[in-house]
Amino acid sequence: MANIAVQRIKREFKEVLKSEETSKNQIKVDLVDENFTELKGEIAGPPDTPYEGGRYQLEIKIPETYPFNPPKVRFITKIWHPNISSVTGAICLDILKDQWAAAMTLRTVLLSLQALLAAAEPDDPQDAVVANQYKQNPEMFKQTARLWSHVYAGAPSSSPEYTRKIDKLCAMGFDKNAVIVALSSKSWDVATATELLLSN
Image 1 (cartoon, one colour):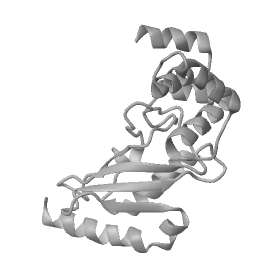
Image 2 (cartoon, helix red, strand yellow; image 1 turned 90 degrees about the vertical axis):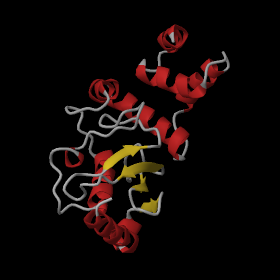
Image 3 (tube, one colour; image 1 turned 120 degrees about the horizontal axis):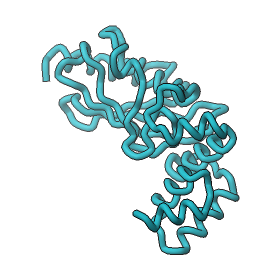
Image 4 (cartoon, one colour; image 1 turned 180 degrees about the horizontal axis):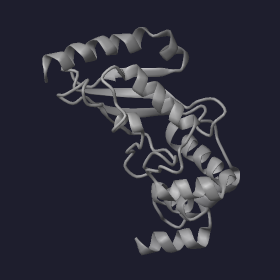
């Protein structure tokens, strides 16, 4: 990795560790390898959102051309959000693409991702199914996002009705993750979710 990128990432890594803002917002970063090309981030779900109480793991890959090109970031923790793929964890955020500037840092990226959880952009979605639910049925979106936060990110428990539907399909022998995805994408309708599970 280019020397400039290593020096820069070392400095930014320390900045995140020492930052009062990052400790207050419960943002963390750890090294995955000693040469600073891969990091593991963690952000806490923001208050007053369906993600509150959850902890979200991020994979952060630093390109050779850093800081002139953005880091490649994706969610490792599954999340139900219009701008994050519910399948791959890929993120649709302008600063990770064409709006990146060399003056931005790891801290900026982590805080921007946390802000994205609090303010989705459904008209520029990464996950069309989630964005559609967000726009058509905001209450169902909140309940679904809260359930995903509970199951995958350790947030406090959510809708007992949704949990019953998951248990019902799991009792039929389906994989829990597949059941959650099917019910979430089929508006929590057990019949159409079952059809989807049987067709796969």
